Structure formats: structure tokens, C-alpha cells
Image 1 (tube, protein in one colour):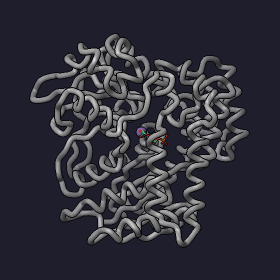
Image 2 (spheres, rainbow, N blue to C red):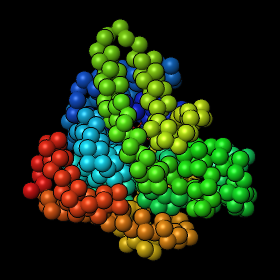
Image 3 (cartoon, rainbow, N blue to C red):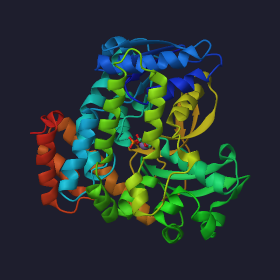
Image 4 (cartoon, rainbow, N blue to C red):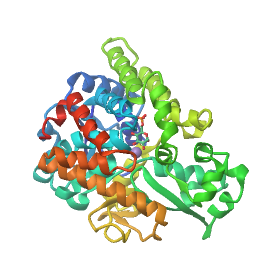
Length: 445
Ligand code: G6P
Ligand code: MN
């Protein structure tokens, strides 16, 4: 079984490889091909993987290449985790937005639109190459903004591209844990778009336990989302939102905190990761140890500004490992070996949410087997959530259309229609600012 990782020089690749090392079953991945545009990053990550493999038996072989077509040929699975424009691009997404007083987060608001506009053309090119060179491959998309990018790729790959994210899994795990249940045995009633979903119920042994949590302020205030959103607001909503909804519900505070921060998240990661890749140029460096230290710091500071505005304190130790590599592995196992399971994934709607069309990619629990991911039926969203989901999906569609036509006017429309961009004039200036900051947006005319 051959797995090709696009963005193979990326910092989180060792997480995926670590998950593969723990898989001893028949039909597991035996061959990993890393693809990246940057040979230096590839060699740094290859060193970390080699140290991981040295501690294991029968580790999958690892090869690295900067030739995309060569990497794709013969792949059974393609894992896409690229970052168009690098972390410098992410920092610029934040800077330009914050200067206009709006959010520049990589997946939410103006920053997510800018990142989407430069990522979609690259993702579409990859999808077309996969369709040509590895038509039977399954593509697992982790590239953010994951819902939008998955939808762009699905126009060329249909249901063979599946988007993943670890935040709904983490959320379900935290809720099950505070309720004293086993996360593996819980049924999580979650739906929305990527980074824009709500848990409306959590069933253990056939009973919805969420009302018990919502009725108990102590329990509700004891975990990440309770601290972030506050007990009162969760009780008002009657649901537990994905952590990324903090950027919507507490937008003003989040924008101010990011404006005041010494460094934005993107700028922090740009410098932190540059340091790691620099360290890897020393042939005597302990690659795995340096990587692990950097990873721990990254995880501990995740959404730090949001937590600070809410007075939420440090992250729980249990929350420090995101676990997206586990989602990716479970998905590959289910497909390759028909090990049927349920995972929250980004797939085409196919009638699941009646307010969206069939091809809209949504985030929803899916049954996964050798035939792919099948969304399960869920109860409709409440009106407030439907409003946000429809507004953001409409923005995503404008991004896809701007990426296809190269129309700057359509790009302005995408920014202007976003609920977190408060003026058409701001949208116009954002397009100017982003075009000046990103060579990858030169196609917008
Ligand atoms: C969460 C999100 C991912 C994101 C990751 C890392 O797991 O679901 O989409 O890539 O956090 O965020 P960071 O700010 O550390 O890059
Ligand atoms: Mn995510």
C-alpha cells in the first residue's frame, strides 16, 4: 500500500508517520512517498522519520521527491497537507486583515478567504493530476481551509476526496470525557461546515447525555469549550460549538487580542518552525528530539489569544495532542480493509442538510467502508446555525468562482459577503492588500 504525502516536508508529517508505525495489520501502508517543493524541508523531515523508524519494526519505507507526477503515480492514498505561500503567507493573511480591523485567521473570515483564493488553484491542479495519474487513489485532504479546498477538489475527484479535521473529534472526546463516558462508545450528533459546526447531542448507551451537561454549570465550565464560550452562552445556545466559532461569537475580543499580540499565530509559527528547519541543517542535531520539543510548544500555544480573552487559562494536558493523524489512519484503514467505522469528515452533502445543495461539502458523521465515506442523516440545524452555514457556504462559492474565473470583482464579493467583514469598502481594500502581499494572487484581474 503506497501513501503519498503532499506537503511532505511539513512539520506535522512525523505525526502521520508515527500513526503508521503503530499499525501492524495486514494491508497496512508499507511505502511512504513524501512530496514537497522544498528539498531542504524534505531532508529535515526525512531525518525525523528515520529516527522514528529506528525505534520500530517493519517501518514503512520512506522516499522523498520534488517531482509531483512521480509522487502521485501508483499511489493508493494521497494525503494532501500543503501550505501555499508558507507560514510567511499565513502571517501576511493575518497582518493585512488586522490592519483593516477584521480577523485574519487562516480558516475563518478574511484570512481564510485570502488563503483559499491562493490555495484553490493549486489544489485543483493536484486534483486534476490525481485524476489522470492515480485515478483509483483516495485523496485525504487536510489542507486548510479544509472544507473549501475539499469542495474544490471534489469537482474533479467526486467522492474520492475526503476532507479531515481533528477539531470535531477533539470536541466529542472532551464532552464524552466530562460526562464520564468512553469517547469510542459515544455517538456524536455534530454537523456544519469545517470549523463551523455544533454538537447538538451526545448519545451513550442509547441516551442523549448532552442535556445533563448543559444543565450542570460546574461540569459545563470544566472543559475547554465551557471555558472558552462561558457557561451562560452554551446554555443559551443549547449546543456546544466548535472552538473556531469563538471567532464569530466573540469576534471583537478576538480581533483586539490578535491586534495586541506581540506576534500573530502565523508569525509565531513562521519563526518557530524556521528555527526547527535551521536546526536540522546541523548533521549532529537530534532530529526527533528537536521536532518533539517544537511540537509541544506549538500545541501548548494553540488558540492562546482566544483563551486569554476568555480567561480560560492553559490547555488541559489531555487536549495537547490534536489527533488528526489518528483520523487519517482510521479513514485509510476503513477504506483499504473495509474496517467499517464512523468518523466526522468533510464530504459532499448529498441531501444531508436540506438547506444546501447536493455538492456542497459539509462536515458530518460518516459511515466509512471500502466504498468510501457515506454521510449519515442528521437533524436539521437550528436557524441561527443555518444562517451562518449558508452565509459562509455562499462565500466559499464566490471564492471557488473567483479562483476559476480570475475575477477580482468576484473576489471582492467573497470578502464583502462574509459575516465577519463589515463593509464593502473593507472588502475592496482587502483585495488590494492581499494582492500586494501575495504573488499567488496575481491571477485576480
Ligand atoms: C486544529 C485545526 C487544524 C489546524 C491545527 C493547527 O487542529 O483543526 O485545522 O491546522 O489546529 O493549528 P496551528 O495554529 O497550530 O497551525
Ligand atoms: Mn481543522
